[in-house]
Image 1: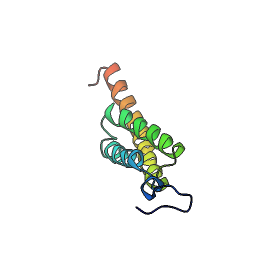
Image 2: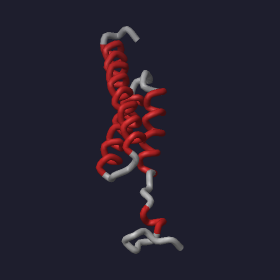
Image 3: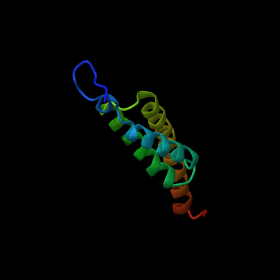
Length: 94
């Protein structure tokens, strides 16, 4: 088993990127469903929160940033589509 200069095993020196990968997956799903009222908003906020959490935990920065950014775009789009749908329902046009 190889060791790092500090005497730790090499396997523990590798960072785990599971949270950043989850952020990217949820961000892509949120981006693709962003126009669906309610779904895009919830998934977008989830992806954004996961992205922020992944960045604070020292996960892969590019994956966390892309996933969080896609989630933020989806959250804004979901908010607009949810608001428009609610306005249509409340005005009796739907």
